[in-house]
Amino acid sequence: MSRSLKFVSHTIEDFAMQVTYDPVTGEGKVIFNLSVVRESDLMPVLEQIRTACRSGVCVSDLIRVVHAGEAINGFVVPEGHAGICTICSVTLDGILLKRGVPLHPIGGGVVEIVNRVPRRFTHLIHYDETTIDPLQVLMAEDISSVTEVIRTGNGTILANIRECHMEAEPLVAELLEDLAASQFIGVLEVGLPNSPLLGVPVSPQYLGVVAVGGTNPIGAVREAGFDVETRAIKGVIESTEMRGIEQLLSDIRVEIRA
View (tube, rainbow, N blue to C red):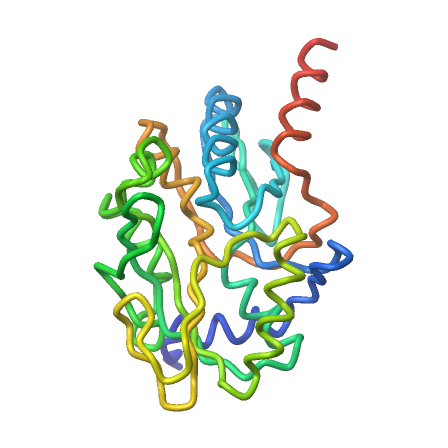
């Protein structure tokens, strides 16, 4: 029996319903992306991710490293490699739903940044028209210039957009305040009701919310010349199983010295 295609919009809905992350407590399940790098490249790759996190082009600084032979969500990291779990920006959709905000994920694409200010989407792939995560596709095409944004404040980064019903605008505003004090820092721009956001139209009685793509740090890793394979929207994980990148690097250095 043939299986019907599953579009990314349906995948997002499935995983968003599993998100339980509370930005106030910093606990709960988040959606993660999994990237696999050579074990020998792990430390410089993590340093590159730290630089991306410091520059604000990431969703969160929370990371989990999975070593060779260990399994996560059914995937076993191959010998000579290490897995890096980063928070996927689609987690925001789950957080919004948990707060009672009606929404519709629109798509993922590339956003032009000028003087560290987002200007417009230059590319966009709609979630309901693709079976592969748009940001994973666009990152593989080397369309973005995350490193340039980190270095100069100009260039392009990966981002995604969803639309929320305008009646829930107070709930969105309240959530943004809570996120500002949390380790989920990926909201890039919020639009006005019935108005396009960064060049993307929204439905009547809705407002747009753009989030920084969770794959941006890995995009910077690719641009630095490291070999990396990424699986976007890989699964859900407890945020407490992850550590801030600064703490993670410090712990790894201690382990190496020991």
